[in-house]
Image (cartoon, rainbow, N blue to C red; front, side):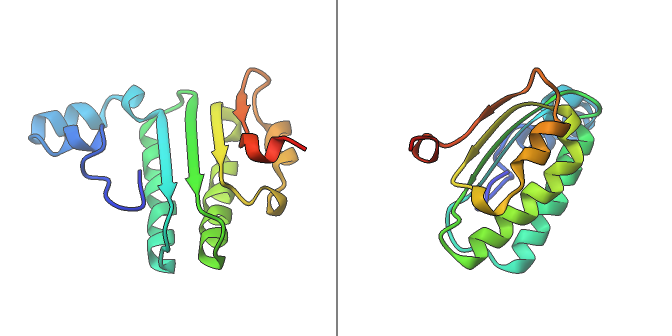
Length: 135
């Protein structure tokens, strides 16, 4: 899922081929267990709400499979911080399923990631931005 267009992103691309491919794609949870979210420019509040709703749909389609999540969000603006917080708060509902998580350009000081890590499985891999990890 991206801030620009998602129709050309697999598995959504498969859903646009024909009704048979759509049915197969929607019935195959493994296709939906990886989610990439990228917002690197200004996003309206309605787009942010739409992104959170689409994220829930995407994850629901993944069934009970472990999730691989990558978030690249520009938090330099108030809107960027708002969407980052909204998306991460929504993702907290799924911490028990996190397997690989890559958090880049997130407003880490504004998030209680300790809660995320306590709730998440012990085998989970979390990658924080290297620029923030270095002191």
